[in-house]
Image 1 (cartoon, rainbow, N blue to C red):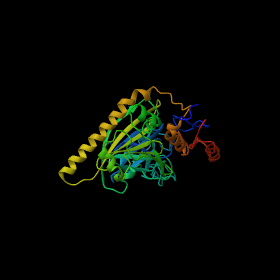
Image 2: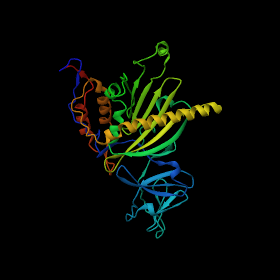
Image 3: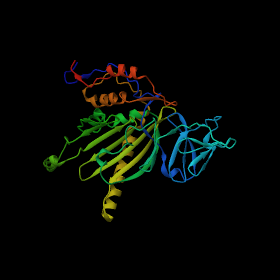
Image 4: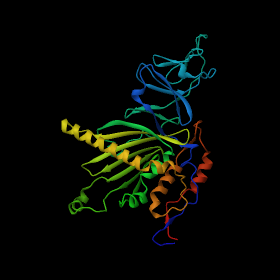
Length: 359
């Protein structure tokens, strides 16, 4: 074995990563906010589970399981009354917390509850938490966390591959070095238990002399990508003066496909010039996404991912797989925990290793 090509030992096959029967508990995008009007109810299927979403008179969104707990009628056929949803079959009514508040043939409703899910609207998107109580926030661009920004909803599209393969492409060092001819190596940072950041702080190829002089003045990485819940990606690219911010909200759909919703961000700037500059940065961000997807779409759709022999430059990929494997896995369609805590501990002890060793 070439001493300059050290291997990364991978002793455990991933159980969650690239598995179409599993997904990570977290926030997932549902539909654009503008697609749901007041007093409107819609039927949706998300990660294999049938749900109903409606907007009450108070403009708040509620997401609940699709079937009435009485006889299983589909609540998507129901109607919104104020902030409550009435079943179309026997006209039982449920409030935004899922509590049954009226059964027409009874003086008092039964003490029962329809399953509802935590819901938030942000960036012009409706999000759902796939567990009981949200442990972290809706995904955000780390660099913009404490700044004023503008968010603009982009296009959505479907690709015939698992969401995790799209995630890998953004930190594939061999791709940058071999295809894009860029010297990219990443620094890893755990933002929280559900989010991991990979960053590159300096340029190392074909820099002009004046750029080298100003390199120490770069406060922020020129390329930074943050992965949330193994499903949403935020990407920051550029120098301190010209930076593009974007988010790819990913979700697995039937047929082992991924549906992608793009969201673009700019810092708020004052005046006409600020508005024009923001339009330029939004256009550049959209162009960046279109180029990345166009170049890699066919490769991703025909890939059978199997990282049999990871080498040193694959370190960031292995680190991302490790991160995904440490998350809380749920089962497609049922949203039940995919394995017991005892099994999780055992598998964590034999997880993929980050350590680099020479053969």
